[in-house]
Image (cartoon, rainbow, N blue to C red; front, side, top):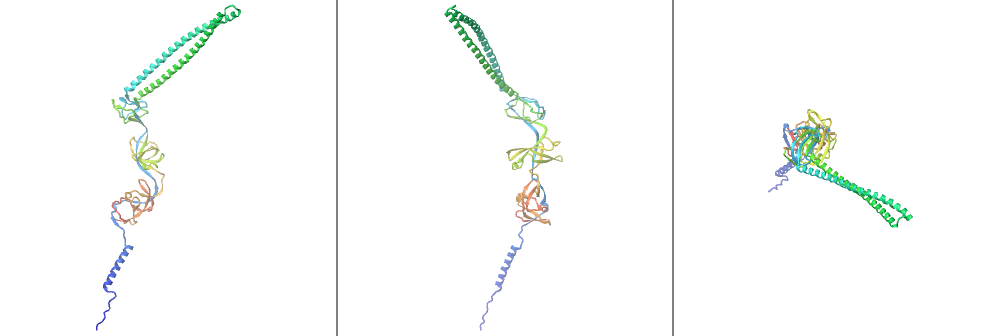
Length: 416
């Protein structure tokens, strides 16, 4: 008889599939939870540069190049234009205050000066002739007044006598009236004559005063013209060295053109151009230093020129302890200019890593020295030697400070 075959609940094929799926899930979960995902790169230690994080004084400073200039320089600018007539000294020679350096000629200025002199002489002659004529007229009127005064005295005596005689009836009334009229007429003429002489004297004084004032103004104009002619002689403003003389005999020079300079060699200063980024941090009194002939010398900012040109501004610095012996004009100095007094901080040496990381992370070398791992950090201020570490690093740790350009997204460097 037939027998019923019972179907198996878990056939071998199904069990194999379940086991395979389970194994794959276990491997995936293990890989997600426990497997290492760090990207690694083998690096030879000879091709990297390491530095040690340390604690010390962070001094914020900038390195600038300065040039040695004379303490005082006078630029020789032509006041009046003209043709170079004669040069009295050579470029680089020492000159004394008042020495003539060169002479210019200007025909227009010379003719103008002679014209003004002629006008002055004409005006002085006019003044002299006017005074002579007015005094002659004054003398003539005074003579007339003297004659009137004499006639008045005679008429007054006649009139006084006739008053007595008419009272006694010794003369006629007509004769008395005639003497009276003559006396009063001469008296009026004397008054008018005296007034005329006084008025003429006042007019003469006013006229001569006006002419004197015109002469004074003309003399002032001539003095100005003479000074203009004197400006054709370029002289040394003080004792020093003539430098960069730019003139040749026969050459024409325009007014305001610079022909050179005179340098005072009794002292020097340092002139430097600084990036405009630091303009708010640089002010008179800041200290700096430089190395010269194996010694360190100090400088101090004396003057800041706030005008920015070509993204830089200019400062003048003076030697804090006197001019170093042997220093020369035009010499270039590498200066370290301190921007603050310094303070305790964790210091990280500067390096090429910053261009790739922006200071946000760095490779820290393990104590074993066999590998280095990426770590997030935070940096603050910087100077030409160090970065200030705000967070992420501790003193004594070693880091890789060379360039990271070839590392890409690597998280760990295996040091070989």
